[in-house]
Length: 260
Image 1 (cartoon, helix red, strand yellow):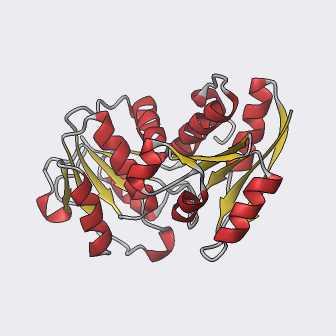
Image 2: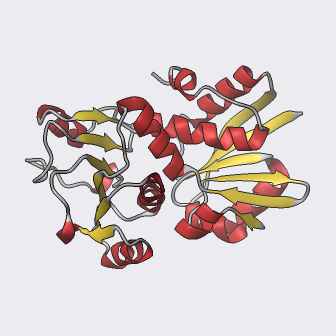
């Protein structure tokens, strides 16, 4: 089989996902190719038509994760719980959708930092699709608390209502073991200081990877935190997707080397 793969979203020109797909195909001894597809918030019908005709599997990024949910014939529990799909596969006439962003983030954090998330206190900046998936992954991993800091009160309330140990920012537990920034680079406010409760004991992860070291990450570097960008999450969630598509094991650490 020659796998027809891709990544869809907007903006998509910077995406490193096709590199991961094609490197993993080679590792698995499979044939295929991957390409970027620019689709925006008004392109749900195009996504549905394209997925059912032109692709065997797709990675889905913003702003399509909620739209993809509505066109799938079969959804896993995580996608239903988070209202988000970040990977789709067409098989025997059925369009399957899953969300592996949260599990991918958790796997990346454990591999990269050796963090024990059981009982950890976490702050997540942002309340969009990436935040929802990451919060869900953290809760499933056994954290003690997640405080969500977002500008959209409705989205924050929706998140906090789903889990007994997820709170709005006013109830942040300190000290903070892990802080995760999921907000888009374009809309960020330049911060002059780290949040109260963050220090040398804190792991700080910015889920963006362009630039590799954002101003937010650099600020936390100077505060003595161990920091990371989104490349590890990108890779570890991609591995979960591809293992689902192909039913073959893949080495996420080795695949990450392709990007670094």
